Length: 425
Ligand code: IMP
Image (tube, rainbow, N blue to C red; front, side, top):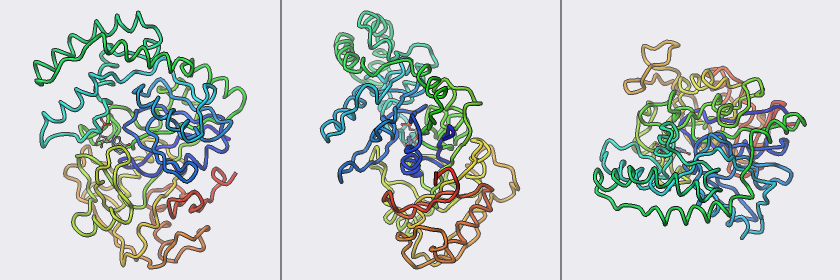
């Protein structure tokens, strides 16, 4: 199995979990490399739904090591809650099954408070963050005043770091935003206790990944969010605070670019976005509502209704370039069944093959493709799909320029059509 990066090609929520699930059967490790518990991934365990935000998706596969790389920001409370929830369901996560980088940055209580206060202060200009402290934690990482997992394991060091950092945070919280100051002693006590519980999982993830590579075990790098939420390549400032593109898998885990052989891009058969920011193909009114309801488009992390619209080939084409995508997986195709005609954006007016520096003014040029009436959830090969549906897939493939090698036709694990050697091995 080659080493593979899986990334979202739109604004997140493309259904990466299902593709990671198919691929994780063949790999030695599933690795998160960026983001934090702003992500959400729904699993079904013993008939019950579990939503994971931080644990990598291989956590339910025996023999698969799950790694939280140095590029991730970790809320220890959320991580422990997820471990406990799986244990309660009879799926304990042993230390050999999960390894947490000692270099990953920790989301502290003041990060959560500041994320919320800043959003509230922005009013109608807010970004629509998940309020999980993600942005403030990455800010502190870059400003060299962050706290890393290794600090949690050393109470004296943690106390020293908190005492150094907290006065400035408290001043900001109380004097700038009018909030309540946090107590250093309480933070040190709570985080030391969580550090003790996490100690068995913390380790040298760089060494581990290089050992797995020497042993020839495949590694799956599981991206969170999507290409257009990337802090460099996304619709800035309406983005998340990490690099979500495939290249971030290297910096966020400590492997070199030559270690990666395949990049799988996940694209929804239409487009969604949570939070604020430009969305050229957004469908307002009844059509947007129709997609939201049939696609169950409500955020897994915040429960917010997602904005919905049509497939944007210009966007996904740009994602293919930025990520070096070699294969595409198309998800939620079944949601489009029953429509008479389906608009697809083939480019932006006046842009030719170029991608505009900002999407604020982008005017999509639509082409209408015929819809199909039949329910496609039972289809297990492309030739079982209605002719119009097959034509839709072929047209997207042509517009984007990369083969579609997996098509998801329903939420169930088996409601998947695979072609291409990566998915069928
Ligand atoms: P943050 O990552 O919480 O700072 O939020 C920044 C932006 O990214 C907001 O628009 C969020 O809605 C969006 N966002 C963050 N994580 C996800 C995700 O996993 N799926 C979709 N949108 C996300």
